[in-house]
Image 1 (cartoon, rainbow, N blue to C red):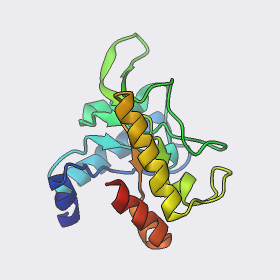
Image 2: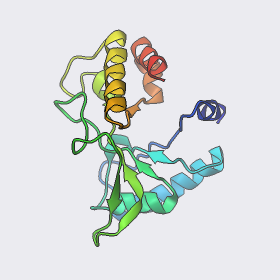
Image 3: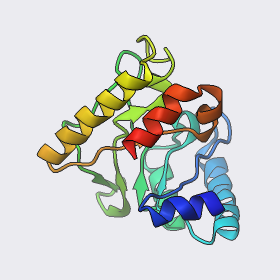
Length: 178
C-alpha cells in the first residue's frame, strides 16, 4: 500500500492484474472479478481505474468490459502486441475508445491499447530478441514522441515481478520511462 500511494502522488495509478485460469466462463469470471476488486478496494482504499488481465483473459463478447464497468474500472488495457509484434496500436489510434454492449449502448469504460508490454520486450516471448536497457528506453521515448505528435496516449505495462526476475534492463526501462 505505501508503494502504491507513493506512485499515486507522482500521478501514476496502480491497478489489479487478475488471473482465474485460462478458460473461465463469463459467470465464473464475473464472480471472481467482483470478489477480487472488493479485496483490492479493502486493502488499498480505492477501486483501480485501470486493469489488464493476466494473459489478457477475456470472457464473452462484452461481458468482461461490462463487469469491469460495473465494478468502477474506467479503462481496460487488455489489447496489446502479440506474436510477431513488439510495438503496435489498436485500429490505428493512440486514443482510448469506449466499449459498447451487444445492443449498441456505450459502456462507461474505455479500451486503451498497451503499446509496450515487458513480456514482449524484455523476453523473446513475441518472437523477437530481448532488447537491452538502452534499446528499451529508446523505444519508449520514440513512442512517447509519437503519442505527443498525434495527441495520443503511450501506455507501457510493467509487471512488478519482472523487476526482480529480469533485473537491470527492466528496472532501467521503468525508471527512465516514468
